[in-house]
Length: 240
Image (cartoon, rainbow, N blue to C red; front, side):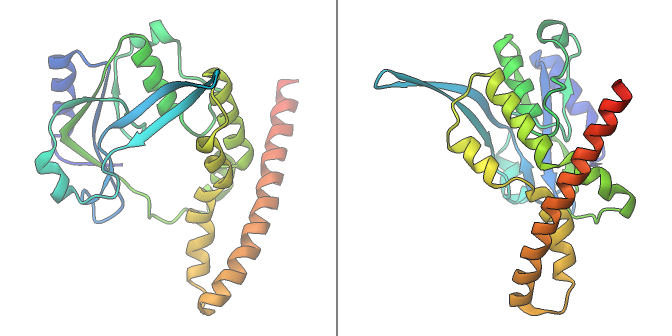
């Protein structure tokens, strides 16, 4: 995370002047720094629909302005109430946790921020975007070799599946396209951070990239399952 000069005061002023429970800066992504929007607020809520006597509870999650240029977006942004803040950077009033409890530890690696924002809204709290505060979430820095094992566990298929299952059960959600799309994309962060950068360096052409990429994706699934299983076994041994 790389913050701009004076990033903190606008968040504090916003919280003081609006009484916001959560305040988010304008979050950018990648490099050059502070040039591309990652999150400018959004939506996180449960939508209840009843059709033909069947009630469905759908997760609504939207991120505003992602991928847009800051220079195009910032002049039109102002402090406003929103429905989504992300953990890359947010300010939260600690007293809200006396109402809603602590962060859900069963959400191991995904949608923790969505869960928090919904809980805050249900408790009568508010989320604000304060675009006078700007920071950037770096996504392109290569992983250190010592980080790879942890990254494989942190973004493992097993942990993501467990998190999505917890989210579904907690909010009594319908297994709709939202979840189907998440299931199809299991492991995309590992592909983005580990496999794709390695394959792009190989002098094998586009066809070779596809072949080697598919092979590495298969290996990744096997290795990832091994790392997750080994960790779970060690964790159970420590508990016993």
